[in-house]
Image (tube, rainbow, N blue to C red):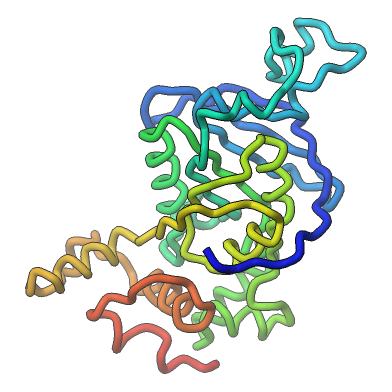
Length: 279
């Protein structure tokens, strides 16, 4: 990637606890790590796939440590020190920086593709046997759930996802990824294959000294179907999407056209969506 800048000072992070999380995404070791940090009071998380990616702060030895106390917080009771070579077989793992989305991931909102992106990242990392999902508590691109719902109402009134945030007195995107960079450092991960369509994530991580050897796009399933239908010269059947509403397409088109996300808009959507919405 090409974004390079002077490294910034990162917040301090510490993994407080970790536990094994069985999932539907195949066999393997998936562990959820809970972090504290010096920037805010939120419990940001890292879902780690594979046994070779290890948290230095979780596994450091405390004066009061016993075998039982280490096991209770999820630290390796046998590990005397964490060294970088422990992560040598996890060179450039898949990484996804994912901001929490209650509406999409918990109650199934069709206004966004957040749940699909999270599930796809989990599937890919489970298949690869290695990876990290950094799950940041930054609802609504950092404006919180209340403001996110108000933004939805503004979108229904004619705004798009960017102008709605601005109308509420916020930046289009108020998220920071410094905590994500600090969490990667704690996990000993400095070279990654990043699952994202967002060039701002690339810029921030590279600014923090993370080497991004590959950017892997997250293409919505519905858009893949539209692209395939166009390539095959067939008509796109909306029924194939289980009558999916257009809200998600409007949202995705706005992120491409207004926020610079790197995705090819399907031909079948080039004359729909928020082109005529108020800016």
